[in-house]
Amino acid sequence: MAEGLIHVELTQQQNYQFQIKFGGAAPDLLGDEPPPLGAGLGPSPVQLLAAAVGNCLSDSLLFALRKFKQAPEPIRCEVSAEVGRNAEGRVRVLKIDAKLTLGVAATQLLQLDRVLNSFEAYCTVTQSVGAGIPVQVQVWDAQGLRLK
Image (cartoon, rainbow, N blue to C red):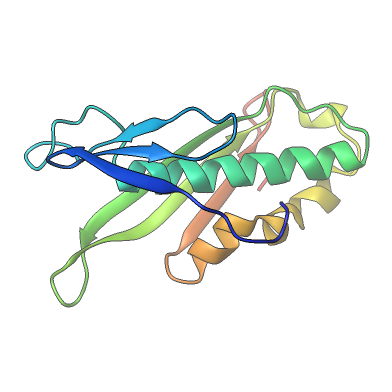
């Protein structure tokens, strides 16, 4: 990821629906809160946070494996964000669990242990979010073997 300023623009459409513009060639996105606040016509802020963590972890794992000329595709990632009340009774994201699944068997990949021990440290979003929200990461291969 390049260093610098990232700019995103949100414009209210109605109620809790916001058009999100990322700029460049990236398509706009409609964000919305689920009922009863919103209509659920787009991803909620918590879903966007979970997607950002999962996307960044997937990118980081892919990048690390490709550095060793490995082809783990297709990588799949499932992310769960637990929402509940904190000690002050306010609704917060309490924890995030991410499960990455490689598209191939672990036996097909060289340097896998080295990659599994380091890829998270290079994930910009997960490391930033993890400073305030516990993030648990699991990695599985295509054969259902848990690797991390």
